[in-house]
Image (cartoon, rainbow, N blue to C red; front, side, top):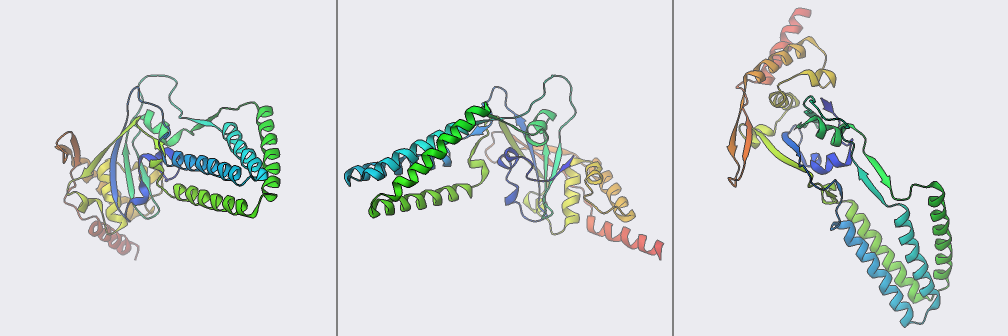
Length: 309
């Protein structure tokens, strides 16, 4: 099955498609690890560092306000710090991935992710993994589920914000400058963390990603044209159905004949396993038939053009 990127945050965390070059083809197998912890935000992640930085700023501003004997700054620090904690409690959530409710036989969940720059990511997985990571929408379980309680928390937060800003406006200039510097640094830290790859934010020990490759290594994974990339994706999937369903290739007679030939050639090619670089596990290698996809497509286009002339 063909899908577009970005349908799930967990997907982009497990596999980083943004780092792929144009017309590159990669293949991975994703397996679910039994009894592993659920997918969640990392406790020891970048956001935790920013949280501790904000806490340190609060303690520092409170200490500086006491030393400077600035009562308004002390009040502002307490009110805005409590505000941050209350909003954090009100918006605390837990990620809940959707899984199958009934056990039993299920079809393979293999799929192909097509990126705008002409690259393909072939994912081999079970239907359960495909459902959790790609197709079933993830659910967010909030800690505060009662609407009345949530509105009350929002009301308290709004009051704390107003009184905190009023108190800060009556603080001394030195403390106001310290507050401004703290907020600028804290916002810069949040923007920096937001720019980091998503995989550094998520705990993904419940899934194991095993790299598979084409025979020929990186030379066969990176291609010069979309036709070559599509051919390598067919070699990995052994099918053209996903191409027709996703309108990945033009719906012309030349392309239809080319797809039929490509599928037939791919079905005749097998795979084998070799030891990885460390010798600890096996890596599946897919054989690439000796076939020139560009020459074949050019031939079919020329023949179709001559028939229509």
